[in-house]
Amino acid sequence: MRPFLSVEKMSVGYGTTTVLDKLDLGIHKGEFVALLGSSGCGKTTLLRTIAGFTKPFFGSIRVADRDVTQMPPDKRGMALVFQSYALWPHMTVAQNIGYGLKLQRRSRENIDARVNEMQNLLGLAGLGDRKPGQLSGGQRQRVALGRALAIDPEILLLDEPLSNLDARIRLTVRHEIRSLQKRLGITAIHVTHDREEAMVMADRIIIMNAGCIEQEGSPEDVYNKPASPFVAAFMGAENLLSMRARVQGEQVELMEGSFNPSVVTARAGRTLATGPIELRFRAEAARLARSEDKTVLQPGTLELRGQVTSVSYPGGHWRHAIRLGENEILVDADTPFNQGETVRVCIPAKSLFIFNVVEGLAEARAH
Amino acid sequence: MQTRFLALLLVLPALIMIVLFFIVPLFASILGAFEVGDSFGLGNFSKSFDLYSRDMIFTVVIVSISTALIGILSIAIGGYLTLGENPRSVAILRWLYRWPMFIPFIVVGQVLRTFLAKNGLMNNILVSLGILTPLQTTGFLDWRGIVIAFVWKQTPFVTLLVAGAMASLDRSTIEAARNLGASRLRILIEIVVPQVSGTLLVGLILSFVTMMSVLSVPLMINAQSPTMLTADIAFRINAHGDYGVANALGVISLLLTAGVALIYLRQTMKDRL
Image (cartoon, rainbow over all chains, first blue to last red; front, top):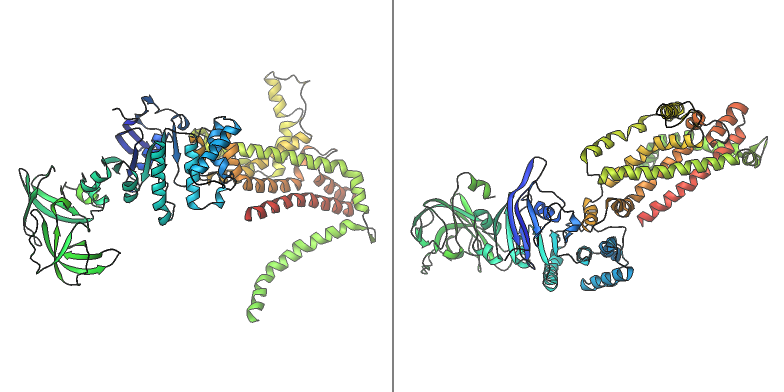
């Protein structure tokens, strides 16, 4: 199936700097896609280029087989919700929502009906005569959404729409936007730097780094099968160890080091070569055991020995900082271990993310 | 008690300056306006209205027309600076528009006098281009000349304020309108200007008050009747030594500007609420 929205070999930049280079992207009708990345990775530039506010140097953007690359923003069938909401402070809620319809020269009754419909849909009923300054953050956000949806766009573009909301409201608005998108069956592209937000809301996550797409896939895929050290780190596998590996057919042997005995694990489809590797895992994926605990480990489980340097309670579980020579890793456990205690850290094979170290690149990407 | 005294001492120099050089002369001329011979009365005012009521209307009309034109032009220039899509012409305009601000009113009057006169530069150019014959030329050295001089001189000042306010607007409020299909003119009128209306109003009121007090331009361009109140005040003093009527005309000017200042105060109070 041809994608509904497709970006082909697009290069975008400002002046002489190129932000996005030969980027390809396809989005299907009705899909909710999250563009995820840290600030400066080009995700907002990509969104603004799709919206038509930035002209690409090269490449094309197509919507339903229509080339929209050179079209002005309003002819693309897209509506953008801005990070700052960009509500017009001198207009009432109803005027804000109805402005797009007024520009389309619809009749007064038609506009009023549609504005009412939007207000009811978004829980803004009765607020039509207020100015944006008299609304709460969450209400403003919904007005911005209503203004975008009122013109019935084919594609809804969301530029970090939740980043100005209180943490608690943000959690409910996530679900509201998601269920609204499902109900309307609208195609949506959502830019965010919040991993959890992307996971909860999107059908598909596109992880961007330095102007390139690092990985795209379902939330489960990018979470459990990160394709690069950057994605692994971005998806929360912050613990990093350097080791050596020997690859033999479908088997990967992590060589014995100062803190671990050697272990053999399945290659499981990973492209790996013998040599130095970097190994990443999440704090919650590892298990802690006392050093005298002799429980037999499942095959392929990596075992590390280290000393607990500090214990904290972020809620739900105890978080231990564990020293392995120069390195320090974080590991969660249900019960606290003593500070200074020597412990075994067991990481099951499926939670290990192993990557070959690319000279020079590894350092830059680790951050 | 000690600190209170110290605080008073700190304010005193400024207070003395204001009282001595501003409040006292102001009250002296207001009082002077009511002084007729050795007693107080409204004689100076009735004389002022008898002699200069036409000039009062003339002044208000000229300054109002100028203010309106300045408003329109500063919105147009500020709008182009904010919404213009050709970076080169925006840069040129940004560089050009401020120049008149640094030219004194008297020089503006002089320049425009030679430019706008019946045998002035403008008509000479029009004649040499064959657009007008020498018989068709008219001088602009009447109320039109004054309006042109005021607009030319004050537009940059208001534009500076307005363009600054426009530049500090949240750009995305403009983009949101563009996203919905608004033309640049509609964006200017419906999105940008309403958001900078406070600044525009302040700029126009300051210009209004400035223009009310300019003497050099009416003297240079249009010294015959009807003329502006400033020229009348100067004439009363220089030709007749008639401080009474001059003071009365001053009080009338003050009342006119006070009316405008009241609008300004109302607006700022409304913004604060």
